[in-house]
Image (cartoon, rainbow, N blue to C red; front, side, top):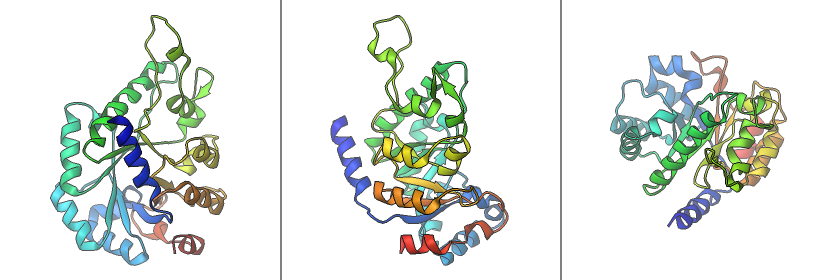
Length: 266
């Protein structure tokens, strides 16, 4: 059953060849807090097709679904936290996803210990369990990076590498906590800007774990070869590019779509 679920998710993930463009509500949170409906309509007018949010501004799941339908935006993903995926919160999260019509949950933030690897293993265990349960409901779970997963080292490796690749403890018969990486059901939401700020290479990350990023974040105020990064994302089968304005949460200024990106998404 697990192998079948992985196959079905992979097929669905690679079906869309040209990425679509969404935006992150957190990046315009002050504006959205004053007028969420107006913010969504304005983003749609700019050319966005989808929205990713972890803030609901008092709306219930059905109300959020209705607002997205009204404004013509697809609810691409919910940005939640690890505790939202622990039992018994997991059941409520699944119900919210079902009622709002969203099929992705991106874990938006976790900062584990730099000294205690078991702290990060707890995150892995939570997401592995949640991803397996959610997959049965047609919901994809992914982990979103910040800079510290690349700047922090665990056992001689970056945290990012440690989270996604097998550990030596798996091959040892020792009385230690068994350390396993994220399962194949857990997806990534690479944030190239955060990756670069932490000293990583986003293109190399995409190639190291191919076809594992349904969505990636785009933050153009961080100096990078964005055309090359986004081309690599397109070649990898990324479905959604999520614009992430960071400087002006009270305005739409950070949501202006540059010409090269307009040409890419056609």
